[in-house]
Amino acid sequence: MTNGAIAAKGLRKSYGDKVVLDGIDLTVPAGTVFSLLGPNGAGKTTAVKILSTLITADAGDLHVGGHDLTADPQAVRAAIGVTGQFSAVDGLITGEENMLLMADLHHLSRREGRRTAAELLERFDLTEAARKPASTYSGGMKRRLDIAMTLVGSPRIIFLDEPTTGLDPRSRHNMWQIIRELVTGGVTVFLTTQYLEEADQLADRIAVLNDGRIAAEGTAEELKRLIPGGHVRLRFSDPSVYQEAASTLRGTRDDDSLTLQIPSDGTQRELRAVLDHLDSAGIEADELTVHTPDLDDVFFALTGGTDQQRSQPTLPSQPKESVR
Image (cartoon, rainbow, N blue to C red):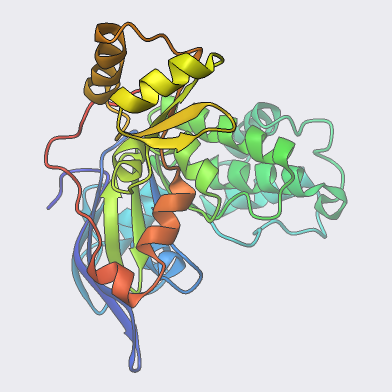
């Protein structure tokens, strides 16, 4: 159970009669981004708090950074960094003073603390604002400072609990670039988010948490293929060619726009079959586009209600090749 930067088996947590985590299993390989999605109250933050030693689990075999969470929580704390939903930045002091405070908490020498603070402030483009009160920072600057403070102890595993909540689109994209750079440097990132595009952009693997259980897990492309609705859309400019195509291909017609919608899971095999069929019939479409469900569709399908959950699809044992 020690494979991966984070490994959890049978993780359970209840508060009174309320079961928050109902025996979930997770494995996060080192140097990757793992994203935990779920609606409010699904248990995302509880999972982060347990794996980062802030609260204890009721049950589960849990390892973080190769250390047993129950037997050696101090070793786990030495290996991780945590950025929560709400900024840990102290607005009454400057950005530099926030950094030096973290250096003191990590028992760095005065010289090492100042060097580390200066390097991180420069890395996160905060040098000019370093001696200004943090209360004057924008939301994006505070978030950058928050993550810079998390990195003072050089953690190899970072928990980011909804790190871009409340940020404008530019600040959010800047944060994505910071996360990508961390992973390129070998850091493992455990990310919770309610922005599905964020998980799609960043995560190597995604798990959807609902009612305390993992509803589905896989890459973004694997999860999208769980949901029906993918299709190839063919558009024609010549009505006669459109009619010929409609008579030879099974699909949904739109006679006004001269388009055909052919059900497809988006794989190369199915796309090639459509193209071969058109070629053999001597038909040429003016436009061909491939449409696949997005993570919004996945999220709503997997968290949409009890009856829907009972009929959830399962991931294929061998991931199919995708067309992007």
